[in-house]
Length: 204
Image (tube, rainbow, N blue to C red):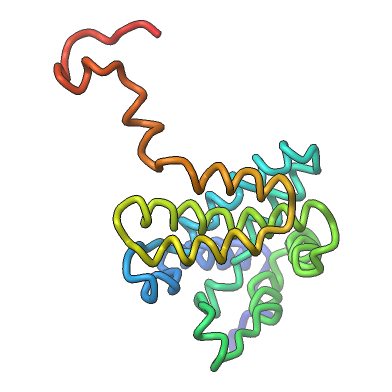
């Protein structure tokens, strides 16, 4: 009888990569309460990893460790789904068990799982930065929803700002909360572009 334990390492790596792909199809569930916005766990995890890189650079911390924690912080949700704050009142997610089963037989157990343990302990500066990266990605989305007219996003953002743990995270998030989400592209071209919309590219 076939089972996971009978599969060779290469097959388990293929299984693992298929499972990682499930994060593209796994929605983040808190937005149903906010009333607007949506994203998959994979969408979220990518920017969290980028945020980890940025925050670790700001803090002069170990960038690789921080990014690794960010990259895999929600990997278990391919099996458990995303539990929002309301879900957690009534349900329990066995995140540790799910992650161990995901990694079993891949040869990655001793490479990925220690980053998960470090993240959960919240003792190292890298783990605190990774925790902040998780929150700041949410803050970025809330700022966008607020700019687009959702009045509830401001209240949610106020709560999320209080959860930040590092000076670097607080500083970055405070700036984000005051920055219009569209200005980076709208103010980029010369004003004449919005009128002409054609013609040769201008030199910088």
